[in-house]
Length: 93
Image (cartoon, rainbow, N blue to C red; front, side):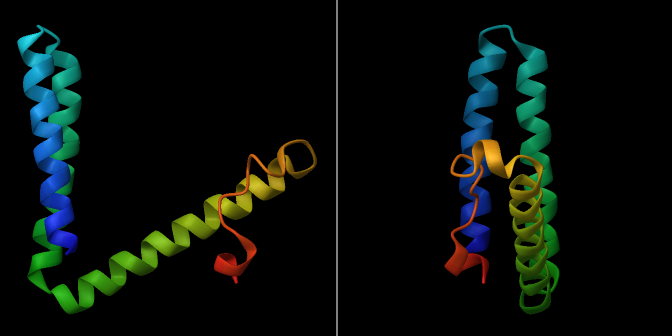
């Protein structure tokens, strides 16, 4: 399913890149093509050893989400507690 999701994102990015290129916005289109290529690299990496690499990918994603959640809660908790709540406490636990 992860591969299907990555391919769907790549397709959407390619469609956007074509629209931007047709509108003579080549630089903006190039940014989307780069993002698409990054998804392709991730996809090929996942395909080399799906069982191991999917777990590594999921762990890295979870660590990043927890880090973002912690940093946002620490930086301005008094001023923006609700707005900066990335994860619900049950999910965080």
